[in-house]
Length: 82
Image (cartoon, one colour):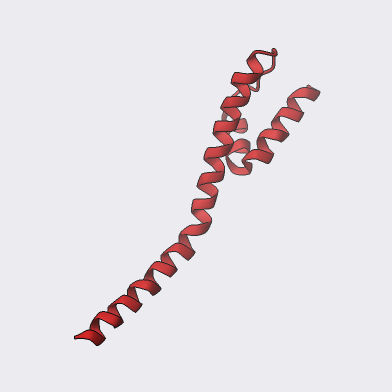
């Protein structure tokens, strides 16, 4: 009986490790995307006080979503040169 509990515990730990290992990359991309979109929104709110805004459309949302903070910085620099 005790051997079964130990075996089930080890199997559970291995499954938990594999689950975390496989979900680490998609979770990182999801968090990076959420941070990028929120930062893009905040940039527009703060920028409105200075007459600066970045149009939110599919392209800017994809850049901010996939690249996160560096993507928003790129969009701000790109908008400054336009």
